[in-house]
Length: 116
Length: 110
Image 1 (tube, each protein chain N blue to C red):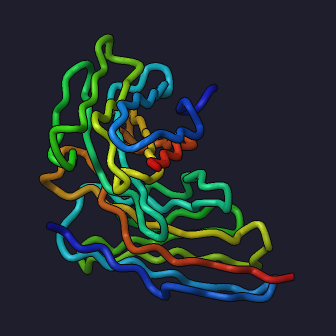
Image 2 (image 1 turned 135 degrees about the vertical axis):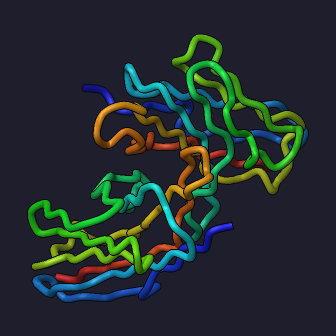
């Protein structure tokens, strides 16, 4: 079946602009996660949704970052007043939260965000 | 928070060689995954292995949860094995989020 998809694959914006990044998880997966990966480092957790609600948003760096998952499937990560330090690859993952390997996370290809 | 360290940080192999990558973590975990990040940036699932040993073709992994480490074995390496290998752990109180290690960058030359 289809994996996790993310759009756009690349996004270039100017400092101060607003951006939205979209994630389509694997069909039927209950959990959805956003991570951020800076050059040369491992991904770092941002936020976790179980269904429609954000169960853990402790990784969001500040209040310019917000994410929603209104129908428990597609999620959008929203960044206001972008800064150059926000430049990174934003990764989305999903997991079934059922079965033997309940929290095996599967990752999308990422959105590369560049803030000029 | 939990610390996840991987060794070696960099590894260069000739095609056909074997290697062992190590992941140490500082606290008990619910879950551990190994990923391969290919040169295009895609994270590919290798193993979901909170404990025990698993094998998949030329790759195998062992996690000793009581001693807080995991090993990834690559046998008969191929150039397509090049990339970065990450282990990631789900802390006991982490609400299912993964904490990634520092990664091992592998280059397999022909």
